[in-house]
Image (cartoon, rainbow, N blue to C red; front, side):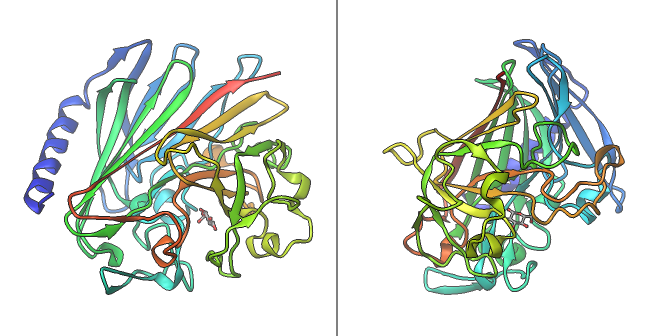
Length: 384
Ligand code: BGC
């Protein structure tokens, strides 16, 4: 794709954006509306897109960081609760957020010392998580004000955010067009479609960084949630959380989630990898179908108290399970609630961390003109 066509895309997005902001879309019982979320410190305004389902379920998204601000789903008594961490206004997403609800990229997770080579050329990325590059750098996708529009998809009405990351943005080669489309269905499936294409060869790894607490945001720790991860292997890390390159069996270790168990059961066991991560902060090698790119169930998270269950389905080869080890009770989120240590869990579908430096990991390079496409679905349901 040429630079000229990127500009055309940007104009098309801006036009469709202004065309729909006043509109409500009603289809298949889902209702999408748009309102003002608030102003950023530089005066720009962030929008809030609200998607409501027939059972009262509600998804709120903002074009700032393509963030999921809130997600209300029922428990086994039909009682709705917001199950994601976030803020009531835009500015803290720029200043205080450990990527709450955000789309992270260009490269989700870490790249060792922010360096990699592509086509024989060495690239140096921003170092924002000493000594490494994390989640796209100082101004990653999570801090951009994306173009937003209400769209009609074959899965129902949705919200599409798109943006253009310029050539050399945070050190990455190539101009990159990226879009993220969220569709929330009447049966509480949150479908997320990613699309990207670049003007020059580059690397791409895009993920969703929502922090989930299925009891309700700010309601205690997630150590009592149960988790199943469909993976026989994980990628152990160094002290600075960069994969060592090994692909180790989870069998007989605290990393075995093949049979559902509480997150708290083994988290404090003595294990070098748990001490490096301060708990779970690792990439699991998903047991996918024999066809790379097919959708498969990566994980099932459940809160036994409320019965709320979330199944994570993806076409990605990896899952970063992060048990909220850096939450410390200082950051105050929605409703003035201070988010406590291990008060939420992120289940980030992705390629493996540091893949550009690990040739035996599934490839994350994107060639000029190629299209990166990926889908992840968070399916909510209840059980007794
Ligand atoms: C990483 C953690 C990091 C967190 C917030 C997760 O994806 O794995 O190490 O602390 O994001 O930045």
